[in-house]
Image 1 (cartoon, rainbow, N blue to C red):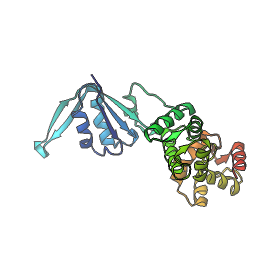
Image 2: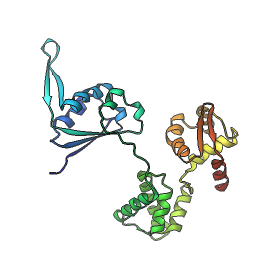
Image 3: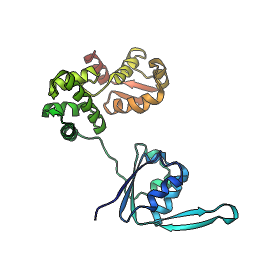
Image 4: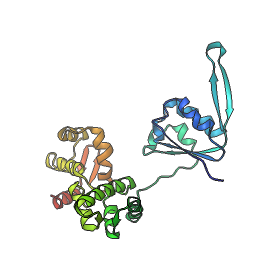
Length: 254
């Protein structure tokens, strides 16, 4: 018997009524996957407690003195929640998940295989070396690898007869500002501002954002995570500091 899958976003489940159809219509042995589960509103989160523990939900029918609480049994199901901000989950919700896994980033070999398979779907002629090149510059993330492939496909269609080899892949990524580590123009602008204006740091994120005319959220959520993981940036109590590796990388890419 196959497993029934349901997908939902934590941001889309704004009230308990948005969650009820997923729970009441789920057949036995189904799987409910909630992406960005840390964005569940408190009311929806509390609605999940009895569903997860006892496979039931309590619904209030009617208004005022005529209101009645009815308990509805649910078919046994499995709930999977995904988040990049586990610390934002409340303790009661987090404790109700008996299995917790921390997923790491994809390896270059895994990403190269993803690029290779999607190239087949996109009817793109690509060699193994080009797949490895794209994978190496994709930050360990399949979504980024797929976006890189789409851009390179369009570049190859217009300038290389539709065929993608290493030279074509490198030329396409150079045009879009992607360097050997996978940094884009905004990443390098961040490091350049930190080193040129603030002498390599320490510098506060708000000062850097104001200097770059960028928002703090954009820098902290989109730019800094990869710079930190690549050991190009460190966070200290006094602010952000560029590492010697960042200095060397910028010198090599000027």
